Length: 247
Image 1 (cartoon, rainbow, N blue to C red):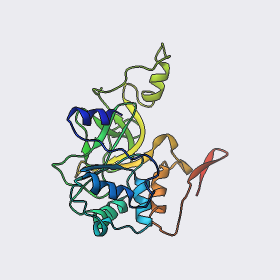
Image 2 (spheres, helix red, strand yellow):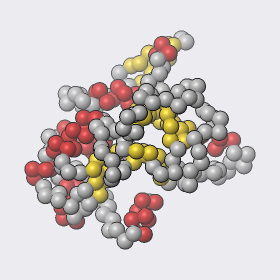
Image 3 (cartoon, rainbow, N blue to C red):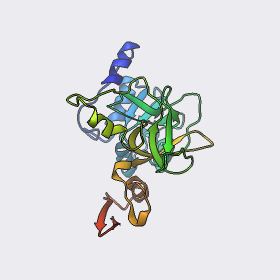
């Protein structure tokens, strides 16, 4: 909703699609893009995955000359999906995976028109967002998986919850992991060379077999690369004092 309000503030037209994006045909959203001359297209990795599975190639069947930017959110965008977009949808497009939340009414990281798009990476941290990756001990890490934290207050940060007079629920939700530092509940790695961010799924769904911590998204990224696999589920199963991962 907040994105829609921003667009109205700058007099941009907003196009909403109600219903299955695969009906009345699998090309419905691309048809709509051409018909309405859409320039910024918001979608999800799951929709792009279905398009890829159906071997759709809109760059051959549609004009898409108005389309400049494609935004993706809701889940990490796998590296091979970048290949699909640039090879089959449009080459001269800014593909931007973004991350944030309804609770912060914003994004921690998203698109920057002035820097390159790197395969599998969100382009850069947003203005006003002191985003870092922390290891288990609260140290900044680069080029390895860590917890997404914001080390300083940001303009849209909620300051309390309703019906939480002593702030206990608020503190537990965001500040229990690292004292005084906002932890959002996501895994990420920050590329020390490009400055890009690689999202690795929710940290509150961490798998920890034999003390080796990783997110289920790391497994799903591999599974989704096999066209012969329709769907998969990766869960942890507690066994005495340890855990095994069941796929």
